[in-house]
Image (cartoon, rainbow, N blue to C red; front, top):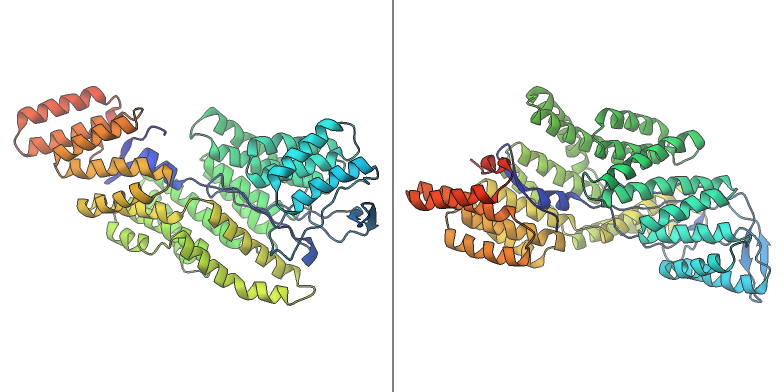
Length: 512
């Protein structure tokens, strides 16, 4: 577990480790388009927060594809407008992507069929194994680019970004198809962005991946100016700039993305990121004591989030409501934050709402022999969001943690302790430790020194690398003893806190 520390922000007491982990999460998603035959079932792995959940390009294959006869020999059929990337869809909608080059030799045919069958069945781990065996056994085979492409796509689907990056770089080197190169460029940027999100904050690796991803997003627009994914790449670039703290550049990216989004498919996502950027900028301004500018940025962010929270998209409304609650807490409006946080649905309920909203469109598409591309895209995007919700950390866990923090800040320690105990018992692994810290703090802040000391000892044994909590509890207990008139005991605990705490920030980390 990374070292957590308690930081006072205004009148708000938060743990660094808890806040950063609770707010992380991200995830890649993919998108293609075409007629009903050309959608693939896909299972995505959730790796990075929520800031990289973008669908890939809608590339068009300009070649003949191959379908297999029962006798094992390929027969040529003209390819329709087929996406070069995967896409979600109901089980009845299957992407007919096969190797681009003819596989006439019987040994090649059998190997290729195994890879393709695994790929179509969504068995991406098996595709990785078989494709690697094919590549090692036949390094000069004319189908090598196709094998690398399926390998890269499988790594991408599995969320194995470290492996996906070199695989897609190899695709760029080997392939002569513009559409495939376009897909590789897109997915490379997405994979590097995901690697950055999964790296420790302020680490050299995170900085390197962000810089590489920004460079690739810039190159993509120049290399493929007519791509239908330009708006998505600009949106990704804006996210990356937000991660780097470059809010002016992010704003320019968002403006460019709005212009490139001619079909208006990204409006809500652009708005959400704009609100997030405004909120982050507000925190910086307020930290610099630029109150007027900071409050103006908070107002703009609140306006955007309020509009999204009342929109018809259940997932986006949930995320916007959580962000509004965070803004309320930052402004000290704890009662308003508590009311908002109590409305955050759990994952199961949210998935049920999304499925109910998607059901009419799914039925309409299934009843049509040639559904409109726009309806297919809408259905695909909704299905991707469902998969994203399934794979990412439950937002209700973060909401529950924030609820406990709100109770803590309003000195409702018993209620806060109940919430944190619930998280410690049933919450996700990344929230258990921070919740246990908060339980200790509730006792210390109430002056219940015996319980606090006992829990600190248990916590120290469970998390031997965590040192800050001991000194902080000594500080809190010392203050409580001071208020009770036990000056000798207070002096002893405060001296102990001074010895244990190396960071002088702790002197101002107690809610007043």
